[in-house]
Image 1 (tube, rainbow, N blue to C red):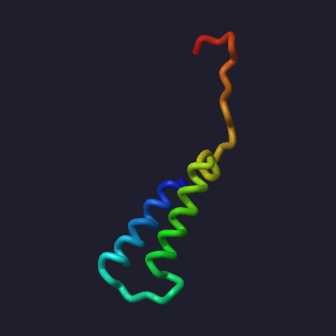
Image 2: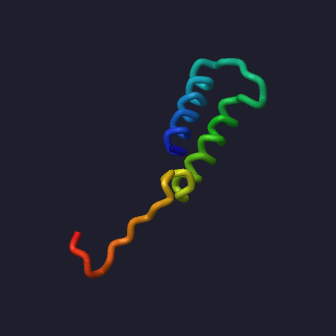
Image 3: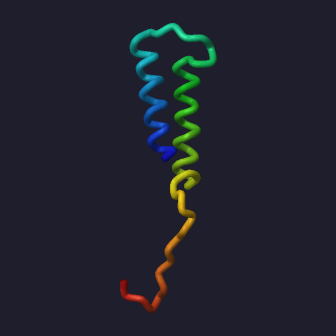
Length: 64
């Protein structure tokens, strides 16, 4: 989920930068890109990936 959010933030930052849209300092393309990097880092570290919290472990003797 955070991977999709980071892709959306990167796309918004790209549009702001490419179209030269004048925004205030809070919503500049650099700040939105940094938010995307934070979301991507959280996604890569495993936070926000699985909603169920269930991890399946294979037993050494099972053949599935």
